Image (cartoon, rainbow, N blue to C red; front, side, top):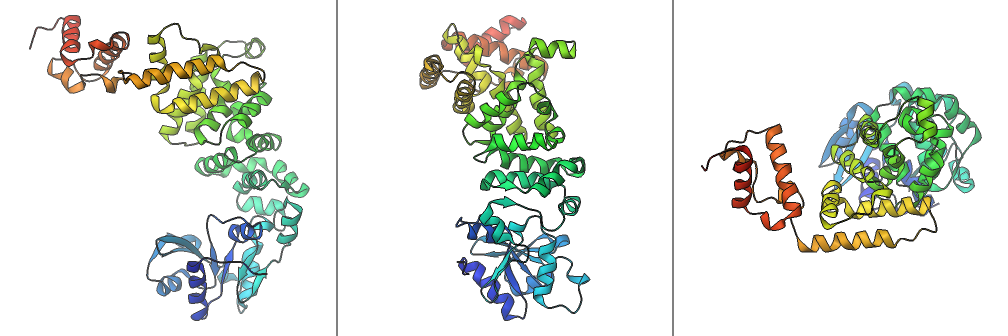
Length: 426
């Protein structure tokens, strides 16, 4: 079997062999190559230790020395070169024995294959057979693999969605039986896998599997027992492949007031604003970047039944709330909600609002505090102190300018503030 390698990868392998070391491409790049898919990354494993690898190449980066990984940089591209796992625990062994030991500790059979031009394909755990069957099986005993790294349970689901594979019965049962291990995994790592799942072609299937294995309760407990779960999956499946839009689709129902049944169940009632705050809490708990959290919150804050605005000022306020940079995503999300909720819905009302928004944007009228003809420094010069007072003043000025764009001059706005605050001309 022949796998075509990039020139830089060929050079790294040649350099290792030239100096008496073994070298193989390994993991996902082998899997993707066998699936005739262009790999995102090319990872290399070797019996050379990190310090030996660093001596062979002109430019390297110490990216993961504690894991035996050195990043080799060639022609501006980066390639991770990692020493065989447990190299020191297996003595007097040839490179293939060391390689087998390394591969035996990897997550899934389809990721536990290696390749070099000299040796060809190395497949000790029937990865090729599982690729042909379209199945995700853990290497060896699934429970042991998951105890080594519990994130592998989510990764199995992500790979199944990315590759349109199924998860083997024994592996799936081990995920369900060991879901509590996820408590030991950092939120950042969980966040990254969740992001990858929602960006697959089968995001709904991924979230459904997270729920059926009880993993979702550790990731997004807000959704795990939701009575709107099926509707949420329908919105998610209808949303375009953009992270913020897919996350907003996943959390969209959290922005709505609870149903009468849910209120009765909880013996209380929460306004939509408090429900929407749960969106921030969920994303912050998973350590999503602040900008992502803010964007998703803005997208779910505007609900479908609020899309009719009586006048131009109301539309401007809507644009300000969502943010001009988020409008396209907002309309994409609303279209997904409509498709999931009312397949025969007439999209004309949404189209009319989008046209009205576009017309206002073309007029380039002031829409946010940043568009005002005055700023904080101007207000400080007339005695307005930074902090809550200044924020309130700026909000009132924006309210005035949204209704009367012609008022947006420095002179007009400062006169308005001085009159309001009883400040003499300065």
